[in-house]
Image (cartoon, rainbow, N blue to C red):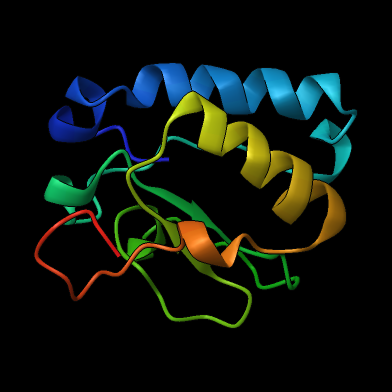
Amino acid sequence: MCKGSSCKAGGADAVYAEARDALSGQGLVPRCELYRGGCYGFCHMGPNVVVREDTGRKRDPLSPEDYQLMGWPGEVYYSAMTTEKMRRVVAEHIAKDAPVKELFGQPDSDDGEE
C-alpha cells in the first residue's frame, strides 16, 4: 500500500488500517503480508494498493518493487481505494483468490476513473 503524501491525503492510512483489521479478522495474516511501500507514481489515482502473489521469488532489498509496478504474474493494481473497497479486496481477492476486476487501476489513464 502506498504511503506517499498524496495517497495519505486521500485516506491511505485508513485503507491500510482496514486491510490490517480485515486480514486479521478473517484469519488471513498467516498467508498474507501487508506492507507500506513508497510512491507508485500514480498519485492522482490514489490511494493505491498493489497485490502480489508470493511465488517464492527471493525478495531483493534493492528492488523497486516497493514503489513501482513490476508486471509480474499475479500482480494486481487497485486505485482510488477506500475502506469499503479494501474490505472487498480482502474478502474476494485475498481470501478467495478472486481479483476484483472492476476495481483494477488503469495506470495509463489520466484520472482515477475507469
